[in-house]
Image 1 (cartoon, helix red, strand yellow):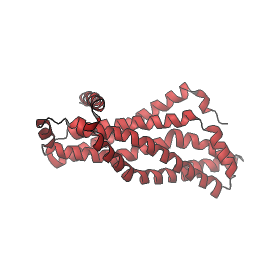
Image 2: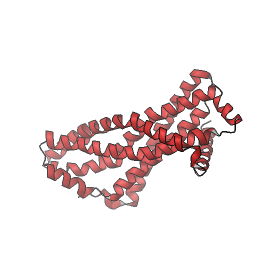
Image 3: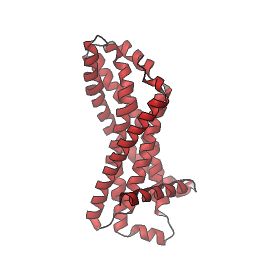
Image 4: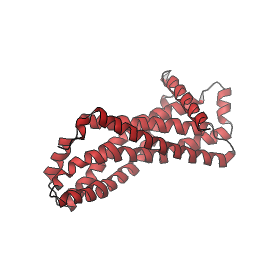
Length: 255
């Protein structure tokens, strides 16, 4: 069964790519509407979650550890590892999967069990091109933007902890952060969440299109989609980070 589901997701991925390479008129309006929807429902939860963790995690805990050795001025550099490379991207992916992904599954699943998707096919409308493809593209694009929001608020939370609570120097924090931040870090972070967006879109689209069993079946599809998204995000996050550090070992040096 898992292999069959994986095959179905890969097939859906191909259909999405073909749909996006076709006429934009088919999916342009849905793309714009879903981009706005993603920003409305996900931006604030991501900003608050990452800011709180940046304050409590790398800010207070790691900053307190560095302060023990008189190195609280290095806290800014640690933010690159904790926020830019790891937690900012992970929170962006998980929040979007929980808030936006569930909506996609519920919407598609409801249409599926009511027979609306079959009716669209009868009318010559491809549900993948008209509904799924624009949502996948919107997830990829908006998650890249939301990742930047997460990075800004996460670093701001760490700054408040390091400077406002641990009495570190503002200039030292900023200097350490920018000395350890490279263009590669930012690009790698944005590309990673773009991959997360594609995964969320395809996984949620697949479970929504294959939902059966009425309202109860839609609920099961939502649950399976969220679990699948979290597993996929965790695995890809691990593999991507290991590849990045192996390919560019210089970024792992604390300056």
